[in-house]
View 1 (cartoon, rainbow, N blue to C red):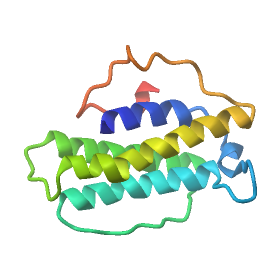
View 2 (spheres, rainbow, N blue to C red; view 1 turned 90 degrees about the vertical axis):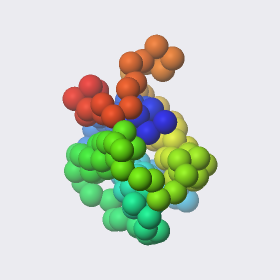
View 3 (tube, one colour; view 1 turned 180 degrees about the horizontal axis):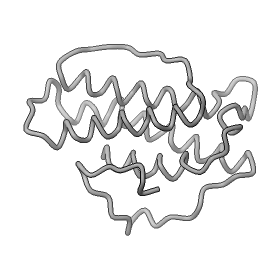
Length: 141
């Protein structure tokens, strides 16, 4: 599931222009930069949960490229931890119903905002994609 978040997020963010971070569809919606910062918080927070620590992160968005780098670092660290033999401080199901499910929701929002901003993501075969747990690499996108 975490590798799927990485794959779908990668498609949504990697080739987006820097200006996309500030696109606002409506005055009450989050910008893509705010959404990606929140996704990073969810992933970093998930790693803390797996290590037995409850944290609430609310990061200020970084410049777009830095936020993309932060995202890939957070998702890779989480994926590697899950692929290891390290003990889990919470049930994986709780991560899926909570922060990982939330991250997927926000990825969908970023994809929608890409289209609304006039810069849609490239088509992808989600079903046929080669998504492998423990092997997340930002260079894939």
